[in-house]
Length: 376
Ligand SMILES: Cc1cc2nc3c(=O)[nH]c(=O)nc-3n(C[C@H](O)[C@H](O)[C@H](O)COP(=O)(O)OP(=O)(O)OC[C@H]3O[C@@H](n4cnc5c(N)ncnc54)[C@H](O)[C@@H]3O)c2cc1C
Image 1 (cartoon, rainbow, N blue to C red):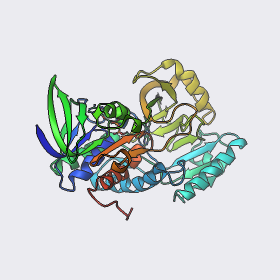
Image 2: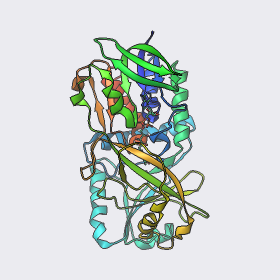
Image 3: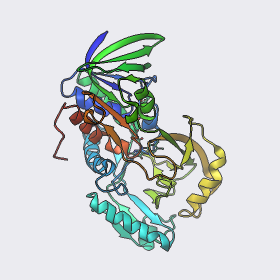
Image 4: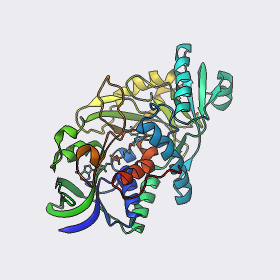
């Protein structure tokens, strides 16, 4: 049996950011990842947008950690050479009845500390993005894009530079909580082995609830429901008609609407939509092209649907279901579930990538590893 200070379950962006934070405090940290490479799930199947923090309810973890995490992330990308661009985003209303929603973003953003939104007229939008139709728009200059692959690599590099380790193809199959030390059973190449650890972080993303249910000692009443909300992307073949991110007003289903993301290579993708599913499935249903085209044409009327190519799918880790208001990030601390040294992370959907460094600070603080930062 190996004894370590901290085990992090899952090498997505959250697990790696947490491991980086804890390893940098001098604690021996091991990240256990079921897949062959880190970031095989949500952390590589997303829009790669650095969100400003416009939409989330004021006072929520999503709002607070998005705004703080965004500032940390821009700094980190710069320091560590993570490819990124502060390209800005347009949020466009395509009918007058959507103007009130834009206004609500301005006031929510202001309460979240995001005070740089600017109103644009259709003429000003046409000067920036001639292909876009709108009746009014907001400009968010602090929104950007990044390479999630670069981010994962940089975080992993930091973990290893601090003496931490990543074990891939290593699935956590169960754990036993104890006072002071926890035991984690893993399966690797068909063989089982065991770790003993003082700190245990469940950052298993979509499977955080599955992992939590295998943890002996954890009250199952503390485990929130898991809802899977799949999102598809279509890419646009040929010349890119846009230089900025373009979002319609958000939808009532909890998605941000089928928006335009430009990637760092200048490519354009549309998505994600929202489809509630019961099992993890990343297949791309090409028959959704028509629905995509209809949604996109509201703000990009000249779209040639034949240029839409099936892209990829991601799955949001939700703890609220269809028709329910989107739940906040759930970061379950020792005082909530009763076990010292354990943090469970559930429902880390968007803006989890943006908030990753701030989430890591909050997890570390909950475990008493470092004081919560107050300077950013
Ligand atoms: C469609 C979509 C678009 C998004 N767009 C954005 C965006 O533009 N901006 C933004 O800020 N956020 C965005 N997000 C959110 C962001 O991608 C996630 O919040 C973030 O990637 C979550 O990271 P994670 O580490 O929690 O999960 P994951 O990346 O899924 O990592 C969890 C890891 O745990 C591993 N694991 C699971 N079970 C076990 C086990 N038993 N043993 C060992 N390992 C295990 C998995 O293999 C996986 O690698 C988006 C999400 C989706 C789905």
